Length: 248
Image 1 (cartoon, rainbow, N blue to C red):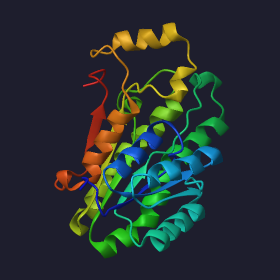
Image 2 (cartoon, rainbow, N blue to C red):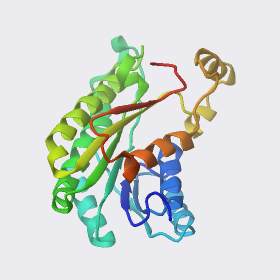
Image 3 (cartoon, rainbow, N blue to C red):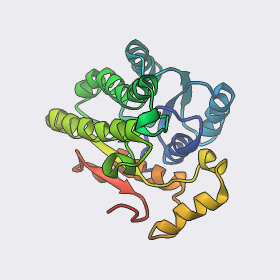
């Protein structure tokens, strides 16, 4: 019996990186997994087979969580296909880095829509189902940058800080219905995205972290298992930093 046996989870942006690691870890722990992808259709299809190998139900949905109606449709489809929605993980996110003086209005708006508005859209859509069940765990992916800021990432940092305020507010509103809402703030996590960067730069980042290494996507997934499982039934409104002590 896994820690998530019998639970159904929806994970946004799960075809690669951290989202993919969460989906695999959830399936290993016995959860049925619904997930979204946008552009990586082949990766999305491959992930379904990988998850089903653990003996759970899995389905990928091509959906844009930053679109209010699409998010509503997505949650309705997941509940229809799986019969429940116990855990919602808002993982989909993008970066459009630039110094403030060079940042365009479009790159600000795009980040706000994809990173922050998507959380509002999916949580609002899942609200009714979880309230009816009088149970649920919502996990929103923020970032160390949302807590401490970062030069060249004013848009990204603002969106991730917004997620923290949103998470705390949702926890206060839905606590009486036994619905928990927490955020996970990853530090420097090594994924496909960081593999294309200059090794010297990446090593410099590692050296600046007290634990002297980047995090693994699986280490974020472990935190998601904890917050999605019954091991954290009295934890809500919190930000769990997973960053090797780079920010304390």
